[in-house]
Length: 141
Image (cartoon, rainbow, N blue to C red; front, side):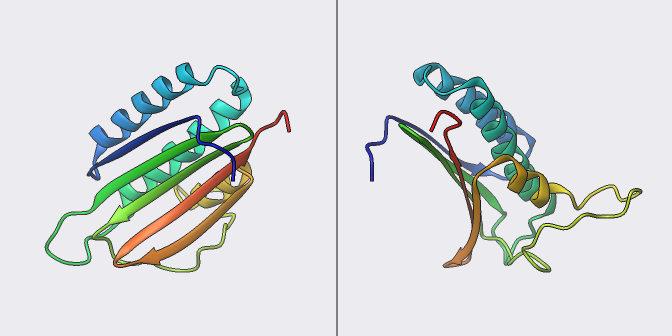
């Protein structure tokens, strides 16, 4: 595995303030890695923010503790990777497959959008935490 060049991490209550903080972290990250192409920055940022927003909007607490959102981003020479976690959350409802909802549907496009923006998306559940791992291979590779 190649060396991590830059990284950012966030963990806090799953709310709109968290989305703003994550967006600020990503903007700061891109300043540290100017070699990452604009298209890679834009698509990866959109995928991470969409994933985090889905947690804020849809994750339900598994118990008494509120849902927390965690985002850990790493940049390697030809790979962007993000781990987007929902701590203290129930498992997601339904299949973890992208779907194309009807024309009039107001939601349900998130996973399909995320998969279109990154190279791979995987999901795992560990110790009561839902984790989505997003990876994007550099468009220069």
